[in-house]
Structure formats: C-alpha cells, structure tokens
Length: 233
Image 1 (cartoon, helix red, strand yellow):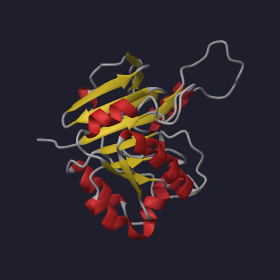
Image 2: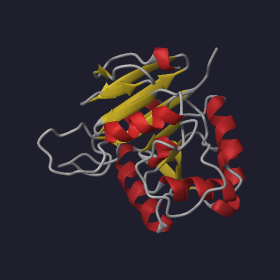
Image 3: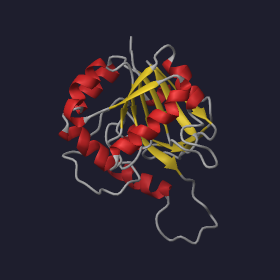
C-alpha cells in the first residue's frame, strides 16, 4: 500500500484574496487531526518574516507552525507531523535543502506517509526535477533533481496562451513543448487556484481552474476540477 499524502497548490495567493485564503479549508481537511506543521521558508530571502507570515495565517485555523532551521533541520524533519514548503524562488529553495542535507530525510518521510503540503516552488521540488519551474536561476544548486514524490513534472501558475497578446516571447505552452523535446516526462500545467491531492495511488485535480496535461508527441489534454490523475502516477 502506498502511504503518500501530498497536497500541491499551484499558488499561495489568489487574485483578490488573502494569503492562503483559497487553500485554508482544503488544508484543514487534508490534515485532519494534525495540528502542527513544519514550515520550510527557504525559498525567500527573509526567512523569519516569511515564517511569521505563515504562522499568523495558520494560527486562526488552530494550526501551530514551526519554522525549519537549516542548522537543526534534520532533527526537525525527523519529528515533524506534517510539512509545508512555501513558494518563492525554486533554485534558492533547492540549493538550501541540499546544503542543509535535508533532501533525503524529507523524501524518506514524505514517501513513508508524512503529510506533505506545498505551494509554487514547494511543489516544484516535489517533482522529479525542477526543470519546469518559472523561476530565474538566481543561485546554482548542485543538481536540478528534486524530491521525486510524484513521477511527473508540474508547471505552477500555468498561463494559457493569449491570442490577442502582442508579446513576442515564448508562451508557457511553447516552453513546456521545449522541455518535452529533451525530456520524456508528462507535465501538468497547473493553473492558479488549482491543486493536486495525492492519497496513495489516487491523485485528484481540485480547485477552481483545472490543468493542462502535456505529453511528448501528444496533443495537450484539458482536465477540470475533480478529474483523476492516476494515469500520471
């Protein structure tokens, strides 16, 4: 039996809403009786302010949040009841996790059933690699390989092509097609307001906007909220 429990949000803030407002009910339902989270603030420069923001948002929900510290991270991960990895710059997040020696313990605990929650950069690192992030490589991690908690890639904040746009750069879809020219691995273009919930061998797309599924040599496929993603596991 696969014990994995993952909740992967495309974004932490919806337009016109506050921080994690769209995610609060889903977080509570996912955690159940668990009321303690280990928050990973490594994707932003000011980790203390980021952790304080997260803690202040979760406190009214009855959830206590502890900030992960690079210096004591191994022990913290070992006793964590659940973990939430926040968004920011994916390259900075991955580099810090490597430097702190936390890639292996995080992966082992999540694959063993510790609830794993994340948003944006926090779901990029749940993929096999971070090659489908939208972020600039402001730092250089030792590898682009990530935690591999799911066998597919995710592109958070996915934006559909705008036929009326005068922008001449690549669309998000074109960049994902470039990825598939070099890598034969499905990519979920996860729109803002959407998330993926994984419970063992079941994976469900939820939220308000759905996703677009890209595979090498195939026409992109649209899937709406409530659709299963088991074929990607």
